Amino acid sequence: MVLGFAWYQKLKPKKQIDCNCETEEKPKFIQSKMFLGIVTAFAIVMLAFPYYSSIFYPKTEKQIIVVDKSNIQKVEFTISGMTCASCGEHVNHEVNKLTGIISSNASYENGNAIVEFDNSKTNISEIEKAINSTGYSVTDKKEN
Image (cartoon, rainbow, N blue to C red; front, top):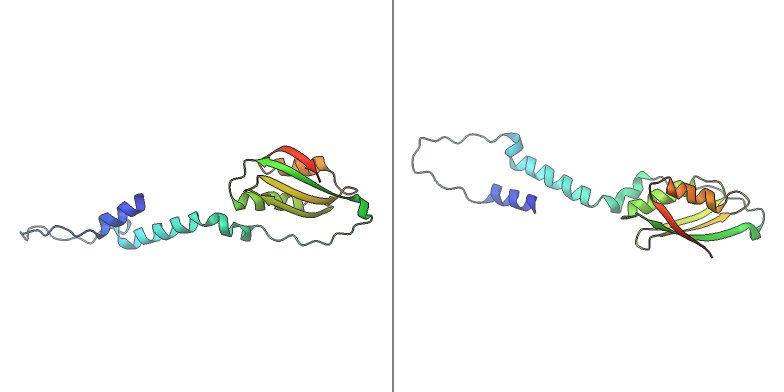
C-alpha cells in the first residue's frame, strides 16, 4: 500500500511552472526512482521468503541402520506457533539432528509433525524437547 502510494507520487505528472525563477534540482538518491525500485524489489523478495527459506536448512541425508523393525515407531506431534513453511523446515532440521530419526515431516498448514524413528536410539521425550527448542510448542502427541 505504502509502496503503491510512493510510486504514484513519483510517477504522477508534475505541475508546470509558468515562471523561470525556480530551477529543477536533481533529487537526492533516497528520493530517486532507483531507490524506490530497490526498496520495492527488496519488499517482494522478503514477501516470498517463506517459499525459498528451505535453502538455508541443508538436507540432512544420513544413513540409518535399523537393527530390529519392531523398534520403528511413528508419532504425530501437534505443534502450535508455526506460521509458514520456514517454521516447518526449522522443526525438521532440529528433529533430524537426533540419532535414530528415520523421517520427519513438519507441516505448518496442519500444525503438526509426523516423526518416524527407531525407539532403541531415541525416544518421544527427546523429540518433543528438540521441537520445543525451536520456539514452537508441542501441545499433543499421538502414536500411530
